[in-house]
Length: 237
Image (cartoon, rainbow, N blue to C red; front, side):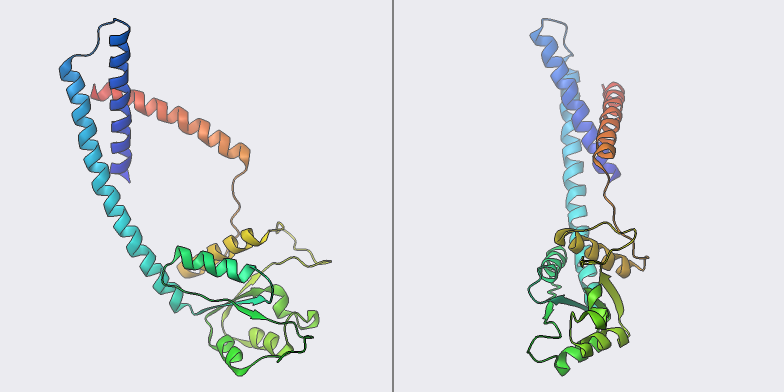
């Protein structure tokens, strides 16, 4: 990343120097010499080579890191449970599968306890028992709410797996200190939480910066970039 930064700054400062010389020539002022132009172009070519090499290296490292992360996520034995008709489980697994090629998670939709369907099967209960991490709405752990059959709720609660509960909205129930999230935000938060579990870090909510903070950072970055480019152009040329 250091060499990528230096290469990018070199190309930008060389471009500024060349454009500066071109404008001087157009305005009839004394322009930099041919040797100075050649020096700027040669610096740019070297920087392009540096950028290409290190970009390819980072790309290979990124692909290797994705494969390793996918293998580690598979070792977690993640089980995604969702209510039938909900899009959260599908969106979550699609996001995780896209970010980690080869993971191939599949959500398991569950019917409510009062529906006239088979309450559960032994395969599902075995999956819950053998899972390493169970991802499910918080309502699945509350038997009185009837979100899923009682046997499934008991299996989730009694499973030795780590439980990652989704604070889904429910009329009359509120979460202190948790902002109301839409389905896409819930999927993003769960994905980040799974990576935190994988890294052994405590699970924390991701709170994106506000518009004011982003604007302030952009302005500060532009000012810093201008200072760096001016210094680098003066140093090189």
